[in-house]
Length: 275
Image (cartoon, rainbow, N blue to C red):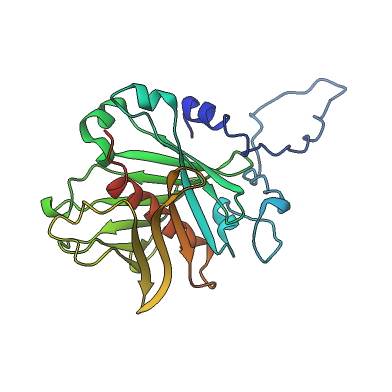
């Protein structure tokens, strides 16, 4: 469940709209007296509110059954951070907020960080957090959970778990103990086997944490390039954006969601420098 402050912050993004749900059936009214022996319970779990068809940007028209299904068929997604005046006036950064957009600029997800002020002050960008991603129906589609880790050098590789409601692990991203090149493995949540390998710029030096602001990561499996992640300056928006390009059109929505989680881990490890 999202905290109240996270829900309030998402209301400022006018592009994330709550879909109108159909009214429920009228309650039954009994003419005579009845005796209630047990509390009424729903027979089945309430289904997700379907996303509006017009907001799904892809080659197919379908109703997404899960929140991350709207990633299917997208050639790329772009992560933009939203900034507030409070971040510029205070010494401690607030909880980060992002908007995940399609190539056409439509908002797919609104992402809101949940972390404590003490962790932000002490650990900075390496802090533990939960990132809640809401779709256009204002339902939780994905949750990214990062624990506190000091890095591969200290035998505590940094990792990020990708969860889906109501509480299933979709997979996780684990840092590989390398010193000359950033490397990560994306594991499946069911088999715990590596699905993709994420490689950063080569010859980064012993301290491969100090990467330039603009850099490129490639995601491959079996020697084939499946996707790529880069961090570039967008002059039209006067800010840096993290961009994911899906090279393989056969990638499933689940695999795209795992790659999206890896992009958020890279964002915090290499491009969030402010404490």
